[in-house]
Length: 167
Image (cartoon, rainbow, N blue to C red):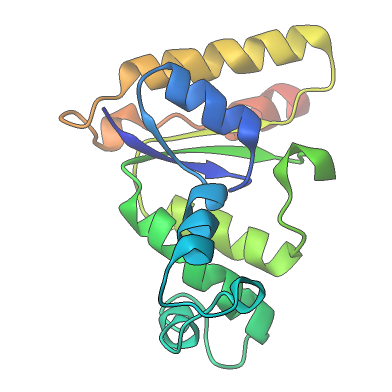
């Protein structure tokens, strides 16, 4: 099965849908849990190692605020590991916002740049849109396997929605 990156990276809803389909959700909570339980780290509230700020530089320039680099030190490796991605745009804070607009923009940009099979959706506003979103996610997850991940599988519903709204 495929390793699927999710955006927002801490959305329990997306992680649950992915895992119910037998795939691995690359969620922020799992990465943070490793940091907190790592015996190398002496005080969990300060759950970074000497290498973390350096690793963050792989994803964000030195001029970028340190908080963004710190978040990308954790999120970036998840994005690198991804074989597919689900991105939900315009999600409310409670859906899984990580609280940093620049990190959110950088994460979504990096996922799009990776050219892996990607499903992009706009957060639903009605019950029917919610049902449609879950159906699209399930269809997307059914269509990907770790052996057959290529550009032909890429789905981009955001562009379809924009065309529908403009036409």
